Image (cartoon, rainbow, N blue to C red; front, side, top):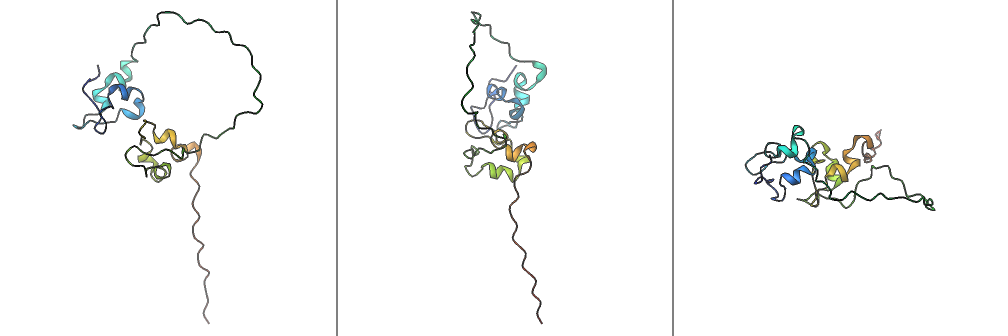
Length: 149
């Protein structure tokens, strides 16, 4: 059973219920005493505890019959899924943008914004290795050697 009094050290709203919404990224959270969510929130973090029981719906859903619809005039624009969200920034520092995350992705892709969106979700070009590495910045042209006679 989860510890109802546990919350993360940076935000008291980060309870075991919050951890359960994204355990892969949140079970390492610690409280102010250094107790991790994985210790305090076994129902959220320990896969052997299983999922919380589903609530039964009182009335079975009514089947819906779908009618075919015409294709839209133009297909929606396609993206590679590798574009960073230009508006994303970390919850503790607005300078912690996707460009900042890209400088040290191993340690920063778990950063979250104030809505709980992780850098790994918002910054795929920085965090997702299948997107390839970010474009290299051009290095300055070396000076042309001058021969003095």
